[in-house]
Image (cartoon, rainbow, N blue to C red; front, side):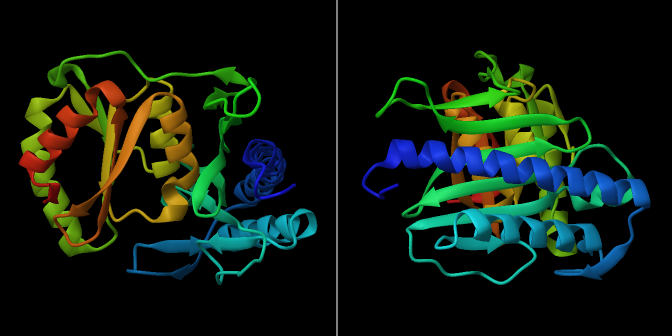
Length: 276
């Protein structure tokens, strides 16, 4: 496929991502059945890595190399791999590792494909529930918009609602000083919305916005591999995403249905989640 033929290429990349994510999810389930232990820590002693994370990313990289040997890869658990094709894969082998460690069934395999820096396909597999979210080109041929699918069925964001009737997802940093800033902001936001949920997987939270189970999502300290696939799926379902300067000094991701994005953006700024 040529880089000048983006729709067929994006469709091919979506197929590859789904095939590889399915195999990766099977491997994660095998590790879960055997028992999970911490293999290492990263940014702090509560930011953990399991052997399942490492083994799953090795599998994903190997499968991508077999099918797309000229592509670049950015993964959470391995070195960046350069490529020559203009395609880069963005991989999170287990998004929600702490949930996985504790046996809480809310973690996912996330694989996105970029073409010349733009995400054009994405897959998030809810491992424990065996649910597949996919963002891919629509069936209308070249120029058709990206569609969001859950197990092959189109999904869409929830309809408009007043801010006080919106259920918002969030997450917390592994760094205690950033977590303190987030907690203070949450105190100010909570009285203004229906409620807040902290479910533990950025990728799945974005998919929940896409399918109308959440009305928005805000989190400081996310990385590209956390949100590349889920963000595409959310946008394809009618959401907007945006990056902000988090009040704790890290990048902050905001996601909400397009019709309610500006309201949530302003409410989270006023609450102290992010700064201009």
